[in-house]
Image (tube, rainbow over all chains, first blue to last red; front, side):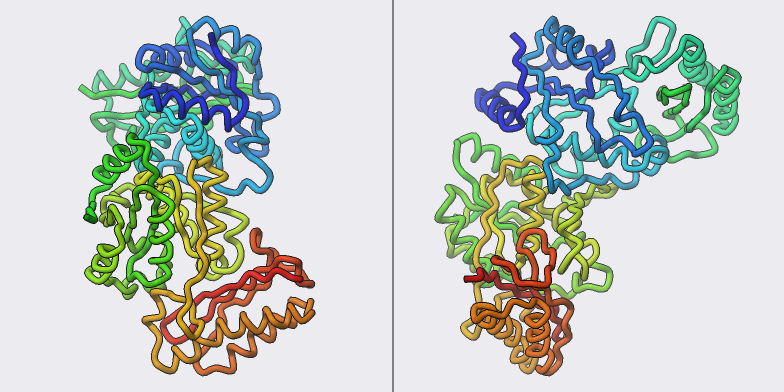
Length: 283
Length: 283
Protein backbone atom coordinates (compact mmCIF):
# COMPACT_ATOMS: atom_id res chain seq x y z
CA UNK A 1 0.00 0.00 0.00
CA UNK A 2 1.41 3.33 -1.06
CA UNK A 3 1.32 5.94 1.69
CA UNK A 4 0.89 9.61 0.75
CA UNK A 5 2.71 12.09 2.99
CA UNK A 6 2.25 15.83 2.60
CA UNK A 7 3.97 17.20 5.71
CA UNK A 8 7.72 17.72 5.88
CA UNK A 9 7.72 16.75 9.55
CA UNK A 10 5.83 13.50 8.90
CA UNK A 11 8.15 12.63 6.05
CA UNK A 12 11.12 13.06 8.40
CA UNK A 13 9.50 10.90 11.05
CA UNK A 14 8.83 8.17 8.48
CA UNK A 15 12.36 8.17 7.09
CA UNK A 16 14.00 8.28 10.54
CA UNK A 17 11.93 5.24 11.50
CA UNK A 18 12.86 3.31 8.35
CA UNK A 19 16.57 4.17 8.77
CA UNK A 20 16.36 3.11 12.42
CA UNK A 21 15.27 -0.32 11.15
CA UNK A 22 18.49 -0.40 9.05
CA UNK A 23 16.47 -0.32 5.85
CA UNK A 24 17.86 1.31 2.73
CA UNK A 25 15.74 4.15 1.34
CA UNK A 26 15.73 4.89 -2.39
CA UNK A 27 14.51 8.29 -3.49
CA UNK A 28 13.17 9.57 -6.82
CA UNK A 29 12.54 13.33 -6.76
CA UNK A 30 10.23 14.46 -9.58
CA UNK A 31 8.07 17.37 -10.69
CA UNK A 32 5.26 14.96 -11.57
CA UNK A 33 3.62 14.45 -14.98
CA UNK A 34 5.22 11.04 -14.79
CA UNK A 35 6.35 9.17 -17.89
CA UNK A 36 8.42 6.09 -18.66
CA UNK A 37 11.61 7.98 -17.89
CA UNK A 38 10.48 8.51 -14.31
CA UNK A 39 9.30 4.91 -14.12
CA UNK A 40 12.74 3.62 -15.02
CA UNK A 41 14.08 5.56 -12.01
CA UNK A 42 11.33 4.16 -9.79
CA UNK A 43 12.03 0.63 -10.98
CA UNK A 44 15.76 1.03 -10.38
CA UNK A 45 15.01 2.14 -6.83
CA UNK A 46 12.52 -0.67 -6.22
CA UNK A 47 15.06 -3.25 -7.30
CA UNK A 48 18.02 -1.76 -5.37
CA UNK A 49 16.44 -0.47 -2.14
CA UNK A 50 14.22 -1.73 0.67
CA UNK A 51 11.87 1.26 0.56
CA UNK A 52 11.21 3.76 -2.20
CA UNK A 53 10.04 7.35 -1.81
CA UNK A 54 8.88 9.35 -4.85
CA UNK A 55 8.35 13.07 -4.42
CA UNK A 56 6.28 15.28 -6.67
CA UNK A 57 6.93 18.98 -6.28
CA UNK A 58 6.99 21.64 -8.99
CA UNK A 59 9.80 23.71 -7.54
CA UNK A 60 9.25 27.44 -8.10
CA UNK A 61 12.89 28.25 -7.23
CA UNK A 62 14.17 26.63 -10.41
CA UNK A 63 11.92 28.50 -12.85
CA UNK A 64 12.93 31.88 -14.26
CA UNK A 65 10.42 34.76 -14.36
CA UNK A 66 9.67 34.15 -18.08
CA UNK A 67 9.57 30.38 -17.84
CA UNK A 68 6.71 27.88 -17.67
CA UNK A 69 6.11 27.54 -13.91
CA UNK A 70 2.40 28.35 -14.26
CA UNK A 71 1.77 26.14 -17.27
CA UNK A 72 4.04 23.25 -16.24
CA UNK A 73 1.84 20.14 -16.66
CA UNK A 74 0.31 18.87 -13.42
CA UNK A 75 -1.34 15.46 -13.64
CA UNK A 76 -1.49 14.40 -10.00
CA UNK A 77 -4.34 11.89 -10.20
CA UNK A 78 -2.76 10.08 -13.13
CA UNK A 79 0.63 10.16 -11.38
CA UNK A 80 -0.86 8.56 -8.27
CA UNK A 81 -2.49 5.87 -10.35
CA UNK A 82 0.79 5.08 -12.06
CA UNK A 83 2.74 4.97 -8.81
CA UNK A 84 0.18 2.82 -6.98
CA UNK A 85 0.79 -0.01 -9.43
CA UNK A 86 4.58 0.04 -8.96
CA UNK A 87 5.08 -0.84 -5.30
CA UNK A 88 6.40 2.55 -4.23
CA UNK A 89 6.20 2.94 -0.43
CA UNK A 90 5.68 6.67 -0.08
CA UNK A 91 4.48 9.43 -2.36
CA UNK A 92 5.78 12.65 -0.83
CA UNK A 93 3.72 15.69 -1.84
CA UNK A 94 5.10 18.63 0.10
CA UNK A 95 3.34 22.01 0.07
CA UNK A 96 5.16 25.07 -1.23
CA UNK A 97 4.51 26.90 2.05
CA UNK A 98 6.11 24.07 3.98
CA UNK A 99 9.28 23.98 1.87
CA UNK A 100 9.58 27.73 1.33
CA UNK A 101 8.02 29.36 4.39
CA UNK A 102 8.00 33.14 4.86
CA UNK A 103 11.52 34.34 5.51
CA UNK A 104 13.14 31.52 3.53
CA UNK A 105 16.55 32.82 2.43
CA UNK A 106 19.10 29.98 2.10
CA UNK A 107 20.31 28.79 -1.28
CA UNK A 108 22.98 26.45 -2.59
CA UNK A 109 25.12 27.70 -5.45
CA UNK A 110 27.27 25.41 -7.56
CA UNK A 111 29.77 27.54 -9.41
CA UNK A 112 31.96 26.26 -12.27
CA UNK A 113 29.72 23.57 -13.75
CA UNK A 114 26.68 25.78 -13.93
CA UNK A 115 28.30 28.35 -16.24
CA UNK A 116 27.65 26.14 -19.26
CA UNK A 117 24.74 24.60 -21.17
CA UNK A 118 21.40 24.95 -19.36
CA UNK A 119 23.06 26.91 -16.55
CA UNK A 120 24.00 29.58 -19.07
CA UNK A 121 20.58 29.67 -20.75
CA UNK A 122 18.63 29.53 -17.52
CA UNK A 123 20.21 31.75 -14.86
CA UNK A 124 19.24 30.62 -11.36
CA UNK A 125 17.99 27.24 -12.61
CA UNK A 126 20.67 25.11 -10.95
CA UNK A 127 20.59 27.24 -7.81
CA UNK A 128 16.91 26.31 -7.53
CA UNK A 129 17.61 22.67 -8.35
CA UNK A 130 20.53 22.33 -5.91
CA UNK A 131 18.56 24.01 -3.12
CA UNK A 132 15.43 21.86 -3.44
CA UNK A 133 17.43 18.67 -3.92
CA UNK A 134 19.47 19.34 -0.78
CA UNK A 135 16.30 20.12 1.17
CA UNK A 136 14.57 16.96 -0.06
CA UNK A 137 17.69 14.90 0.74
CA UNK A 138 17.67 16.26 4.29
CA UNK A 139 13.98 15.48 4.68
CA UNK A 140 13.87 12.04 3.04
CA UNK A 141 17.34 10.92 4.18
CA UNK A 142 17.87 8.47 1.32
CA UNK A 143 20.78 6.09 0.82
CA UNK A 144 20.47 6.32 -2.95
CA UNK A 145 18.80 8.94 -5.13
CA UNK A 146 17.92 8.31 -8.77
CA UNK A 147 18.17 10.88 -11.57
CA UNK A 148 17.80 10.58 -15.33
CA UNK A 149 20.70 11.12 -17.69
CA UNK A 150 18.52 13.22 -19.97
CA UNK A 151 19.26 16.04 -17.53
CA UNK A 152 22.96 15.23 -17.74
CA UNK A 153 24.19 18.54 -16.41
CA UNK A 154 21.73 18.35 -13.50
CA UNK A 155 23.07 14.91 -12.64
CA UNK A 156 26.65 16.27 -12.64
CA UNK A 157 25.61 19.28 -10.54
CA UNK A 158 24.00 16.99 -7.97
CA UNK A 159 27.05 14.72 -7.86
CA UNK A 160 29.13 17.86 -7.20
CA UNK A 161 26.75 19.01 -4.47
CA UNK A 162 26.93 15.63 -2.75
CA UNK A 163 30.71 15.49 -2.91
CA UNK A 164 31.37 19.11 -1.93
CA UNK A 165 28.88 19.21 0.95
CA UNK A 166 29.93 15.78 2.29
CA UNK A 167 26.54 14.12 1.97
CA UNK A 168 26.30 10.35 2.43
CA UNK A 169 24.08 9.70 -0.55
CA UNK A 170 24.74 7.59 -3.60
CA UNK A 171 23.64 9.27 -6.81
CA UNK A 172 22.49 6.78 -9.42
CA UNK A 173 22.16 8.09 -12.97
CA UNK A 174 19.80 6.17 -15.25
CA UNK A 175 19.87 6.01 -19.07
CA UNK A 176 17.58 8.21 -21.16
CA UNK A 177 14.27 6.55 -21.99
CA UNK A 178 13.06 7.30 -25.51
CA UNK A 179 9.86 6.99 -27.51
CA UNK A 180 9.96 4.33 -30.25
CA UNK A 181 11.00 6.96 -32.78
CA UNK A 182 13.85 8.23 -30.59
CA UNK A 183 12.37 11.34 -28.94
CA UNK A 184 13.64 11.55 -25.35
CA UNK A 185 10.76 11.25 -22.85
CA UNK A 186 9.96 14.55 -21.19
CA UNK A 187 6.99 16.09 -19.43
CA UNK A 188 7.44 19.05 -21.75
CA UNK A 189 6.78 16.93 -24.86
CA UNK A 190 3.11 17.64 -24.09
CA UNK A 191 3.67 21.19 -25.25
CA UNK A 192 4.40 20.00 -28.81
CA UNK A 193 1.96 20.44 -31.67
CA UNK A 194 1.68 17.65 -34.22
CA UNK A 195 4.11 19.45 -36.50
CA UNK A 196 6.41 20.30 -33.58
CA UNK A 197 6.44 16.64 -32.54
CA UNK A 198 7.81 15.77 -36.01
CA UNK A 199 10.42 18.54 -35.86
CA UNK A 200 11.45 17.37 -32.39
CA UNK A 201 12.66 14.08 -33.87
CA UNK A 202 15.59 15.99 -35.33
CA UNK A 203 17.21 16.26 -31.87
CA UNK A 204 17.80 12.57 -31.33
CA UNK A 205 18.44 11.99 -35.03
CA UNK A 206 21.11 14.67 -35.17
CA UNK A 207 22.79 13.22 -32.07
CA UNK A 208 22.80 9.77 -33.62
CA UNK A 209 24.20 11.07 -36.89
CA UNK A 210 26.90 12.96 -34.99
CA UNK A 211 27.88 9.76 -33.25
CA UNK A 212 28.28 7.97 -36.61
CA UNK A 213 30.31 10.86 -38.01
CA UNK A 214 32.67 10.72 -35.01
CA UNK A 215 32.92 6.93 -35.18
CA UNK A 216 33.80 7.33 -38.86
CA UNK A 217 36.67 9.62 -37.91
CA UNK A 218 35.46 13.21 -37.81
CA UNK A 219 37.50 15.05 -35.13
CA UNK A 220 36.41 18.68 -35.42
CA UNK A 221 33.92 19.81 -32.78
CA UNK A 222 33.04 22.79 -34.96
CA UNK A 223 32.07 20.63 -37.93
CA UNK A 224 30.02 18.31 -35.72
CA UNK A 225 28.29 21.25 -34.07
CA UNK A 226 27.47 22.83 -37.42
CA UNK A 227 26.12 19.61 -38.87
CA UNK A 228 23.83 19.12 -35.88
CA UNK A 229 22.64 22.71 -36.15
CA UNK A 230 21.85 22.28 -39.85
CA UNK A 231 19.91 19.07 -39.27
CA UNK A 232 17.79 20.71 -36.59
CA UNK A 233 17.31 24.10 -38.21
CA UNK A 234 16.07 22.62 -41.46
CA UNK A 235 12.98 21.42 -39.56
CA UNK A 236 9.97 23.70 -39.16
CA UNK A 237 9.70 25.86 -36.07
CA UNK A 238 12.96 24.86 -34.38
CA UNK A 239 15.12 27.42 -32.62
CA UNK A 240 18.45 26.17 -31.28
CA UNK A 241 19.24 27.38 -27.74
CA UNK A 242 22.64 25.68 -27.56
CA UNK A 243 24.58 22.79 -29.04
CA UNK A 244 27.68 21.82 -27.09
CA UNK A 245 30.32 19.23 -27.86
CA UNK A 246 32.17 19.10 -24.57
CA UNK A 247 33.70 17.29 -21.63
CA UNK A 248 31.01 15.18 -19.87
CA UNK A 249 32.10 16.36 -16.41
CA UNK A 250 33.23 19.97 -16.56
CA UNK A 251 31.52 20.86 -19.88
CA UNK A 252 34.58 22.62 -21.27
CA UNK A 253 34.86 22.62 -25.06
CA UNK A 254 37.92 21.89 -27.16
CA UNK A 255 38.60 22.09 -30.89
CA UNK A 256 39.24 18.39 -31.27
CA UNK A 257 36.78 15.73 -30.20
CA UNK A 258 38.18 14.01 -27.11
CA UNK A 259 38.07 10.31 -26.32
CA UNK A 260 34.93 10.72 -24.23
CA UNK A 261 32.59 13.47 -25.32
CA UNK A 262 29.19 14.77 -24.34
CA UNK A 263 27.02 16.24 -27.04
CA UNK A 264 24.25 18.18 -25.33
CA UNK A 265 21.64 20.40 -26.88
CA UNK A 266 18.59 22.48 -26.11
CA UNK A 267 16.07 23.48 -28.76
CA UNK A 268 12.89 25.50 -28.59
CA UNK A 269 9.93 24.25 -30.60
CA UNK A 270 6.86 26.39 -30.01
CA UNK A 271 6.23 26.58 -26.26
CA UNK A 272 8.54 23.65 -25.55
CA UNK A 273 12.23 23.89 -24.71
CA UNK A 274 13.57 20.37 -25.18
CA UNK A 275 16.95 18.96 -24.20
CA UNK A 276 18.73 15.81 -25.24
CA UNK A 277 22.27 14.47 -25.10
CA UNK A 278 24.53 11.60 -26.01
CA UNK A 279 27.83 10.39 -24.60
CA UNK A 280 30.22 9.31 -27.33
CA UNK A 281 33.26 7.16 -26.63
CA UNK A 282 35.74 7.52 -29.45
CA UNK A 283 37.22 4.30 -30.71
CA UNK B 1 40.85 9.64 26.45
CA UNK B 2 40.46 12.25 23.73
CA UNK B 3 40.77 10.85 20.23
CA UNK B 4 42.21 13.04 17.47
CA UNK B 5 40.73 12.49 14.02
CA UNK B 6 42.13 14.24 10.95
CA UNK B 7 40.34 12.45 8.11
CA UNK B 8 36.84 13.40 7.00
CA UNK B 9 36.06 9.76 6.24
CA UNK B 10 37.20 8.57 9.69
CA UNK B 11 35.19 11.31 11.35
CA UNK B 12 32.10 10.13 9.49
CA UNK B 13 32.72 6.52 10.48
CA UNK B 14 33.10 7.55 14.13
CA UNK B 15 29.92 9.61 14.20
CA UNK B 16 27.84 7.01 12.33
CA UNK B 17 28.96 4.44 14.91
CA UNK B 18 28.07 6.68 17.86
CA UNK B 19 24.67 7.54 16.36
CA UNK B 20 24.06 3.84 15.72
CA UNK B 21 24.46 3.33 19.48
CA UNK B 22 21.68 5.93 19.96
CA UNK B 23 24.11 8.30 21.64
CA UNK B 24 23.64 12.05 21.36
CA UNK B 25 26.57 13.91 19.78
CA UNK B 26 27.34 17.49 20.80
CA UNK B 27 29.50 19.54 18.44
CA UNK B 28 31.58 22.66 18.99
CA UNK B 29 33.09 23.97 15.74
CA UNK B 30 36.00 26.37 16.35
CA UNK B 31 38.93 27.99 14.59
CA UNK B 32 41.18 27.12 17.55
CA UNK B 33 43.15 29.52 19.74
CA UNK B 34 40.75 28.39 22.43
CA UNK B 35 39.69 30.65 25.29
CA UNK B 36 37.07 30.57 28.06
CA UNK B 37 34.36 31.44 25.55
CA UNK B 38 35.03 28.22 23.66
CA UNK B 39 35.26 26.31 26.93
CA UNK B 40 31.79 27.42 27.94
CA UNK B 41 30.51 25.86 24.69
CA UNK B 42 32.48 22.68 25.37
CA UNK B 43 31.13 22.47 28.90
CA UNK B 44 27.56 23.00 27.72
CA UNK B 45 28.02 20.14 25.27
CA UNK B 46 29.62 17.86 27.87
CA UNK B 47 26.73 18.39 30.25
CA UNK B 48 23.97 17.99 27.62
CA UNK B 49 25.30 15.30 25.29
CA UNK B 50 26.70 11.77 25.48
CA UNK B 51 29.69 12.50 23.26
CA UNK B 52 31.37 15.78 22.38
CA UNK B 53 33.29 16.60 19.22
CA UNK B 54 35.35 19.81 18.97
CA UNK B 55 36.67 20.79 15.57
CA UNK B 56 39.55 23.17 14.93
CA UNK B 57 39.75 24.46 11.38
CA UNK B 58 40.76 27.93 10.22
CA UNK B 59 38.33 28.16 7.33
CA UNK B 60 39.84 30.02 4.36
CA UNK B 61 36.42 30.45 2.71
CA UNK B 62 35.28 32.94 5.36
CA UNK B 63 38.27 35.29 5.11
CA UNK B 64 38.34 38.15 2.61
CA UNK B 65 41.46 38.78 0.50
CA UNK B 66 42.59 41.63 2.78
CA UNK B 67 41.75 39.88 6.03
CA UNK B 68 43.84 38.03 8.59
CA UNK B 69 43.77 34.44 7.33
CA UNK B 70 47.58 34.17 7.33
CA UNK B 71 48.10 35.80 10.71
CA UNK B 72 45.08 34.29 12.46
CA UNK B 73 46.49 32.87 15.72
CA UNK B 74 47.14 29.13 15.64
CA UNK B 75 47.94 27.55 19.01
CA UNK B 76 47.27 23.89 18.37
CA UNK B 77 49.44 22.37 21.11
CA UNK B 78 47.93 24.62 23.78
CA UNK B 79 44.43 23.92 22.41
CA UNK B 80 45.00 20.17 22.66
CA UNK B 81 46.23 20.52 26.22
CA UNK B 82 43.14 22.53 27.18
CA UNK B 83 40.74 20.07 25.52
CA UNK B 84 42.42 16.98 27.01
CA UNK B 85 41.52 18.16 30.49
CA UNK B 86 37.83 18.67 29.67
CA UNK B 87 36.59 15.19 28.76
CA UNK B 88 35.98 15.93 25.07
CA UNK B 89 35.69 12.68 23.08
CA UNK B 90 37.03 13.75 19.71
CA UNK B 91 39.20 16.58 18.47
CA UNK B 92 38.51 16.83 14.74
CA UNK B 93 41.37 18.45 12.82
CA UNK B 94 40.46 18.26 9.14
CA UNK B 95 42.96 19.21 6.43
CA UNK B 96 42.15 22.03 4.05
CA UNK B 97 42.72 19.71 1.07
CA UNK B 98 40.21 17.23 2.47
CA UNK B 99 37.47 19.85 3.00
CA UNK B 100 38.16 21.89 -0.13
CA UNK B 101 39.58 19.46 -2.69
CA UNK B 102 40.45 20.58 -6.22
CA UNK B 103 37.27 21.34 -8.11
CA UNK B 104 35.34 22.33 -5.01
CA UNK B 105 32.54 24.64 -6.18
CA UNK B 106 29.47 24.42 -3.91
CA UNK B 107 28.54 27.22 -1.55
CA UNK B 108 25.62 28.07 0.70
CA UNK B 109 24.29 31.61 0.53
CA UNK B 110 21.99 33.06 3.16
CA UNK B 111 20.40 36.18 1.72
CA UNK B 112 18.43 38.73 3.79
CA UNK B 113 20.14 38.40 7.16
CA UNK B 114 23.61 38.71 5.75
CA UNK B 115 23.04 42.17 4.24
CA UNK B 116 23.58 43.78 7.65
CA UNK B 117 26.28 44.17 10.30
CA UNK B 118 29.30 41.91 9.70
CA UNK B 119 27.75 40.60 6.47
CA UNK B 120 27.86 44.12 5.07
CA UNK B 121 31.43 44.81 6.26
CA UNK B 122 32.79 41.43 5.27
CA UNK B 123 31.40 40.36 1.87
CA UNK B 124 31.54 36.58 1.49
CA UNK B 125 32.10 36.03 5.21
CA UNK B 126 28.77 34.35 5.95
CA UNK B 127 28.88 32.43 2.68
CA UNK B 128 32.14 30.92 3.95
CA UNK B 129 30.71 30.34 7.42
CA UNK B 130 27.47 28.75 6.19
CA UNK B 131 29.33 26.49 3.78
CA UNK B 132 31.87 25.16 6.28
CA UNK B 133 29.26 24.77 9.02
CA UNK B 134 26.98 22.77 6.72
CA UNK B 135 29.91 20.60 5.65
CA UNK B 136 30.99 19.98 9.26
CA UNK B 137 27.39 19.21 10.25
CA UNK B 138 27.19 16.63 7.47
CA UNK B 139 30.47 15.07 8.54
CA UNK B 140 29.99 15.11 12.34
CA UNK B 141 26.23 14.49 12.28
CA UNK B 142 25.56 16.16 15.64
CA UNK B 143 22.27 16.34 17.51
CA UNK B 144 23.21 19.70 19.03
CA UNK B 145 25.77 22.28 17.93
CA UNK B 146 27.02 25.03 20.24
CA UNK B 147 27.83 28.59 19.17
CA UNK B 148 28.67 31.72 21.17
CA UNK B 149 26.36 34.71 21.29
CA UNK B 150 29.31 37.05 20.77
CA UNK B 151 28.91 36.20 17.09
CA UNK B 152 25.19 36.94 17.33
CA UNK B 153 24.63 37.38 13.62
CA UNK B 154 26.50 34.15 12.87
CA UNK B 155 24.25 32.34 15.33
CA UNK B 156 21.15 33.73 13.59
CA UNK B 157 22.55 32.85 10.16
CA UNK B 158 23.16 29.27 11.29
CA UNK B 159 19.67 29.00 12.77
CA UNK B 160 18.33 30.17 9.40
CA UNK B 161 20.48 27.64 7.53
CA UNK B 162 19.24 24.81 9.74
CA UNK B 163 15.60 25.82 9.36
CA UNK B 164 15.70 26.57 5.61
CA UNK B 165 17.66 23.46 4.63
CA UNK B 166 15.62 21.15 6.91
CA UNK B 167 18.53 19.95 9.04
CA UNK B 168 17.77 17.98 12.20
CA UNK B 169 20.21 19.80 14.44
CA UNK B 170 19.52 21.81 17.55
CA UNK B 171 21.48 25.05 17.65
CA UNK B 172 22.37 26.09 21.19
CA UNK B 173 23.55 29.68 21.64
CA UNK B 174 25.67 30.35 24.71
CA UNK B 175 26.13 33.69 26.53
CA UNK B 176 29.17 35.86 25.85
CA UNK B 177 32.08 35.14 28.21
CA UNK B 178 33.96 38.26 29.27
CA UNK B 179 37.24 39.13 30.93
CA UNK B 180 36.91 40.51 34.48
CA UNK B 181 36.91 44.04 33.13
CA UNK B 182 34.18 43.33 30.59
CA UNK B 183 36.09 42.73 27.34
CA UNK B 184 34.40 39.96 25.37
CA UNK B 185 36.69 36.94 24.98
CA UNK B 186 38.02 36.60 21.44
CA UNK B 187 40.97 34.94 19.76
CA UNK B 188 41.61 38.29 18.09
CA UNK B 189 42.19 40.03 21.46
CA UNK B 190 45.76 38.75 21.05
CA UNK B 191 46.28 41.33 18.34
CA UNK B 192 45.81 44.19 20.85
CA UNK B 193 48.71 46.31 22.11
CA UNK B 194 48.68 47.36 25.75
CA UNK B 195 47.12 50.67 24.80
CA UNK B 196 44.69 48.99 22.39
CA UNK B 197 43.63 46.63 25.16
CA UNK B 198 42.62 49.67 27.25
CA UNK B 199 40.77 51.30 24.35
CA UNK B 200 38.96 48.00 23.68
CA UNK B 201 37.23 48.27 27.04
CA UNK B 202 35.11 51.02 25.56
CA UNK B 203 33.08 48.47 23.54
CA UNK B 204 31.54 46.64 26.48
CA UNK B 205 31.36 49.84 28.53
CA UNK B 206 29.46 51.69 25.80
CA UNK B 207 27.02 48.76 25.45
CA UNK B 208 26.43 48.75 29.20
CA UNK B 209 25.88 52.50 29.28
CA UNK B 210 23.47 52.24 26.35
CA UNK B 211 21.51 49.63 28.26
CA UNK B 212 21.18 51.98 31.26
CA UNK B 213 20.12 54.86 29.02
CA UNK B 214 17.39 52.73 27.44
CA UNK B 215 16.25 51.42 30.82
CA UNK B 216 16.05 55.02 31.98
CA UNK B 217 13.72 55.84 29.10
CA UNK B 218 15.73 56.86 26.05
CA UNK B 219 13.82 55.73 22.96
CA UNK B 220 15.79 57.17 20.02
CA UNK B 221 18.05 54.70 18.25
CA UNK B 222 19.95 57.61 16.71
CA UNK B 223 20.79 59.15 20.09
CA UNK B 224 21.88 55.77 21.47
CA UNK B 225 23.99 55.07 18.40
CA UNK B 226 25.67 58.47 18.60
CA UNK B 227 26.40 58.13 22.31
CA UNK B 228 28.02 54.73 21.76
CA UNK B 229 30.07 56.15 18.89
CA UNK B 230 31.29 59.05 21.03
CA UNK B 231 32.30 56.79 23.93
CA UNK B 232 34.31 54.56 21.60
CA UNK B 233 35.84 57.24 19.40
CA UNK B 234 37.18 59.22 22.35
CA UNK B 235 39.58 56.32 23.04
CA UNK B 236 42.94 56.16 21.30
CA UNK B 237 43.24 54.22 18.08
CA UNK B 238 39.63 53.12 17.71
CA UNK B 239 37.91 53.11 14.33
CA UNK B 240 34.23 52.22 14.32
CA UNK B 241 33.23 49.76 11.58
CA UNK B 242 29.53 49.73 12.48
CA UNK B 243 27.18 50.35 15.38
CA UNK B 244 23.68 48.99 14.90
CA UNK B 245 20.63 49.25 17.14
CA UNK B 246 18.34 46.74 15.50
CA UNK B 247 15.99 43.79 15.57
CA UNK B 248 17.79 40.74 17.06
CA UNK B 249 16.52 38.42 14.32
CA UNK B 250 16.31 40.27 11.03
CA UNK B 251 18.69 43.15 11.96
CA UNK B 252 16.37 45.82 10.56
CA UNK B 253 16.69 49.22 12.19
CA UNK B 254 13.88 51.51 13.30
CA UNK B 255 13.85 55.07 14.67
CA UNK B 256 12.40 54.07 18.02
CA UNK B 257 13.95 51.46 20.29
CA UNK B 258 11.73 48.38 20.19
CA UNK B 259 10.80 46.18 23.14
CA UNK B 260 13.62 43.75 22.33
CA UNK B 261 16.69 45.25 20.74
CA UNK B 262 20.11 44.10 19.69
CA UNK B 263 22.95 46.54 19.91
CA UNK B 264 25.83 45.15 17.87
CA UNK B 265 29.09 46.78 17.00
CA UNK B 266 32.42 46.20 15.30
CA UNK B 267 35.47 48.34 15.96
CA UNK B 268 38.98 48.24 14.57
CA UNK B 269 41.83 48.78 17.04
CA UNK B 270 45.20 48.39 15.36
CA UNK B 271 45.29 44.99 13.62
CA UNK B 272 42.25 43.76 15.55
CA UNK B 273 38.65 43.99 14.39
CA UNK B 274 36.57 43.32 17.51
CA UNK B 275 32.84 42.70 17.80
CA UNK B 276 30.53 42.80 20.78
CA UNK B 277 26.78 42.99 21.35
CA UNK B 278 24.07 43.16 23.94
CA UNK B 279 20.39 42.24 23.87
CA UNK B 280 18.25 44.78 25.68
CA UNK B 281 14.71 44.02 26.79
CA UNK B 282 12.85 47.28 27.35
CA UNK B 283 10.81 47.44 30.55
